[in-house]
Length: 396
Image 1 (cartoon, rainbow, N blue to C red):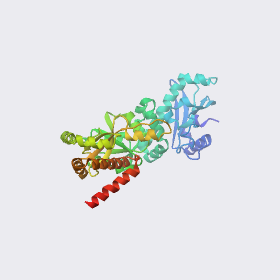
Image 2 (cartoon, rainbow, N blue to C red):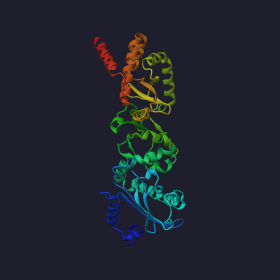
Image 3 (cartoon, rainbow, N blue to C red):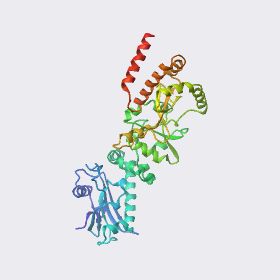
């Protein structure tokens, strides 16, 4: 009998592919896509590849083994040849059959075999093309695929210092602030406003929590689209990419990301300079913050927490949650809305009661930490301070 992968595509029905896949790879669902290839040239081979619909139960465990079945003229050489697939496409199942491979080749010789390298490169190109086709022509199926295997794609972008990021960047999809649907970076760039200077994103636990962050409000007002990143890998992926098609990718949660005009920036700098002594007193109350200052980023909210430097608040949360002894701290900036009435209250307290100013500062900092999804080290102290402030207000 002629193996399925050596038969003409025209003679094979979809149900034949599905049955072969389920029997060969012990899956109970049909594959999301089938890639049937017959190549001749520098190297000749037949391949039959499958993109699964669901991730295997052990896919994200150490026990999972990637690889394709490798044949030479219909004779099995290796059950799982890992050199045929890069790690970011480790979910692909299938068989490869080449007459250019020796039946007597050892595992050690296969590692260095140039023929195998050419086949692997060809296969990678085919998989990439198939996934891009899914994005364009079967979006719902791709979104389902990305739920299951998107982590692997993201790791491929970040791994090896971003060596493969250009191959994979168009496979990434993120939820948009526009309509809470998922889009690629290419689609984002194509509909950017003319005066928009960057691709903006922000990280958080869920889309719903991100959507109500104080920092997002300003971008919505200007009708700038923001990508919502809810996976712990996203911050590292975006930091690795840095740019897409010549456009900067910026985290709106960083202190350096600002939409102010030059005139607004100068006016704010003047107000911050005038209040530097007050900020010095406030900083005495919250020593783990690098800077306290006014901002015009906020519309209705009184306060927000941003970061300076390479380590962001989201990176701090991710790394500190890992089961290791490693602990990092982002350089945090407490930003106070200079147009909110709380700014006038703080200025008044600086002139009349500096101890009360410190209490207010602690409350504002705790509020900003909660908004960012950070814990509060001293919840009892903060709740007591809130009660004291409320009591004092009532007496007034």
